[in-house]
Image (cartoon, rainbow, N blue to C red; front, side, top):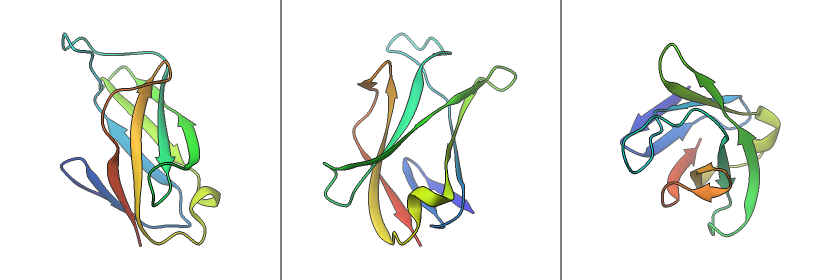
Length: 98
């Protein structure tokens, strides 16, 4: 189960976590290539995993799936950000694992 509250996400650890995002550049053009979601540790400096996104042209959305194995034993607040061509598109946002 994945829940969104603005940019904060709450999800269940030890299960595949599917996150969807509408991603645009500074000119509001939809980005269609080379996006990743990066999951960071509790201190926000350690990178736990990076997952390549899949662009879904029919909905203009990106889908990122964090595999269950990447979140085994994790509980509490972690951080995520979305990258395009290895550049962050946003500040790190909270991802709460229960």
